[in-house]
Image (tube, rainbow, N blue to C red; front, side, top):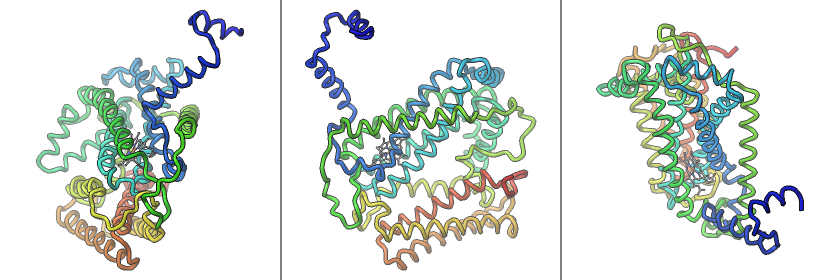
Length: 449
Ligand code: HEM
């Protein structure tokens, strides 16, 4: 008997390690797992090219955020006088404190990116269609919770970066007529970020949003079980009712999930070891950096604010986009494309055309506005010239694009809706990239050094 076996026998003196007992333990473990995972799954859903492991990666990152966030709570103090100091103390004095903060920061940023890609994969495999419609809505709720968690966490270090990013993001609300300013002051607990803001953000970040995630994540997974698992990947034209062979989850699914988790943990750990989470000087409400930028995931909106009247940049366009996203699963489609990447070969070509079109047009429109029209900066705009007119042009362009692409490809409405969505998402991504990397002093266009 080796030392480990002797120690174990001292804890469980009655337990004999016969083959019979080992088998019993294995069965207990297996039935425990089956409370969470299905006993068997269609073999085809295990293909990496269906999910790319994105939902699983998102879940691992959520766990990592809960774990690291819980530990950060031991060091962090949510008052303007102490917050920055406590982060500096964590960075320099607490063993592995800096690593812990880096893990939390990179997991949070990675989560937004991974959830965005997961959302795209669900969309492009038509996995939002019945019976999964409501899970798409739950997914959008999760996405909002993830973005808001990031946003509220961004303020907590109370450095210049955090203070001014939150100031600029929340000041966008001022442009919403009627309720904008009151809403902003309600969130901030005053006209500008201060002690109350820190407490509000801290409570939302560490209590309300985690509880929301803890509620909606199991709901998301329960809906997947209720829909009989994931969509079955298939080629265009293949019968959607063919499920293919079933395969035991243990080891085939579980081992893949465990391997994925190990890879995600390794990537986060390596990033945290080599790249430090930024920390600028302590917040100074009297000294705004130039340029003042929102967090990267809101830069698309900040960039839009440079070209459209705030009512359109903050209310009308995002509102319509949100409405579009919520409606996607409830539109009456002509064909059942569930499980087929990009609906069809034609759909793939149409999506590519939309990406090229959106990239060139967005770049062209931004350059035109900056160097020729000079529509000006946020807030200084005119509701008709900088709001209604460009909005009607945009709307007419989207309707025209849908109509022309549907006709020229002789496409179904599944393929045409997908192309339109691709056009809008690409435009938003291009705006975000311009805002993050190509805007410098005074928010003018520049070439990154
Ligand atoms: C914290 C955020 C999220 C987590 C942790 C998460 C997790 C997962 C996991 C583990 C799966 C199964 C495996 C996979 O598809 O990769 C899944 C499937 C799914 N997710 Fe998410 N998800 C999140 C956000 C979203 C979002 C933003 C959407 C869409 C707006 C979404 C819609 C769906 C749908 C419809 C399915 C079923 C797909 C199918 O049947 O093939 N999820 N999610």
